[in-house]
Length: 366
Image (cartoon, rainbow, N blue to C red; front, side):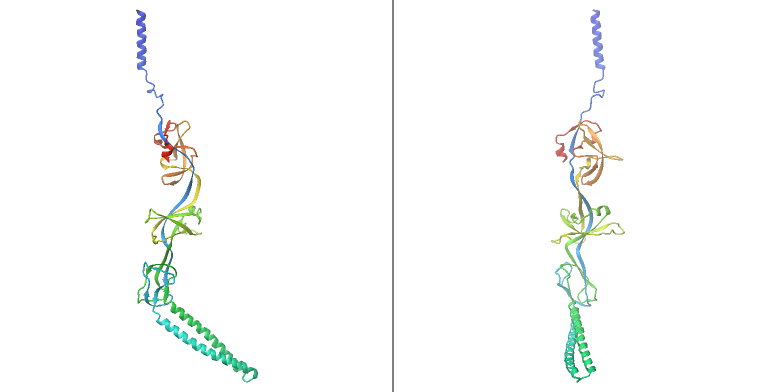
């Protein structure tokens, strides 16, 4: 009887001991479940290095058309916005005074020619009489001098005729190239002087964009670089440009270099003064590593990312950032091809945490 009671007491103690002992979960021995994450396997890509600068459109050529002679404006054949062809008359001046000057020069030319004809006959006669001593040497010399003077007079008056013709032709002011009238500064009946601007003519095809580049961008520039242009007025359309001129000296005030770019404008949709964003592909990095900007953890003195280790544990990597490209950023140091970057779920991780990789990580990350 005593033995039974004793065994019953031992059993009771064992039951009480088991009930009071802490569970394995409460001791912290069991590892927490893995954190679900999605990954992106690092693959190097070609990265174009793009220089982006804002400029304004200007015509390829712009000329303030001026008069070479003075006079009264009798008519203009084109006004602001009109298209004109090369050598077409744009402005007409009153030609009356210039016609009179030409008529006077032509009359003087006839007189000079008549005098020359008489001098030629006298000189020929004197040459035939001198050997026979019918005339003196002085008479012959006078005939020769008269002939040479008349000959020079004809040449001089001929030049005056040509000048008068040229002056008369300048009363019709012609377009120097195909273009469009951008401004008119005169009115019919106005008296103008030589050299006074009359109209401004522009050549809008192609258009020109002047931009200024800093030294670090200028040194990578080449005339063969690809250029694209986006206008504020047409944000959905991209225009192709071509580098036309690159300055070889920097502006002393800004320490920047001017670059001129041409963009075709066959439909004249591009207008002078429009804002243009110019993008120039200066070079291409063949093995660049780009990752989503959202995966970078910014610390006070460094940048870090989480990658998946071989044992399915989170590893923290210190990285060095490069250029930003929309929602991606270039990694210059810290990642290599084949690394598995954690793109989602990293905000809940600590180094060494167990992770559970989604089966669709790669596709969704892309």
